[in-house]
Image (tube, rainbow, N blue to C red):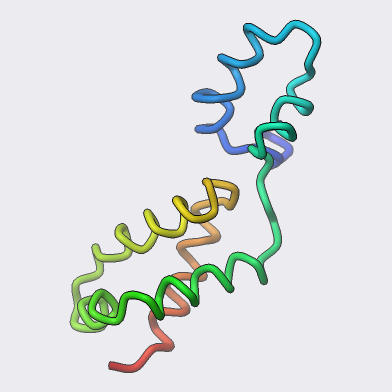
Length: 105
């Protein structure tokens, strides 16, 4: 499932594997689906979340625009929290930076 990009490595190791050890009659896919651990590849949905977060934190956007690039970690935390880690962080970061760069201060 990890190599097929259906679930993140982190979710597989931290959540799926322990559940699999105690769930005799469930497949890995069943467990991932039941627990909503499958990755979401809908870029439009991800971009909607990113835009909402960026609009909610204008002061942090200003910090980013003024050169404090590490503030992207704050935004990534918000994205992962609100999407329950169901999007690939690499894709989220690319879209986040594009959105931040579009904003004016």
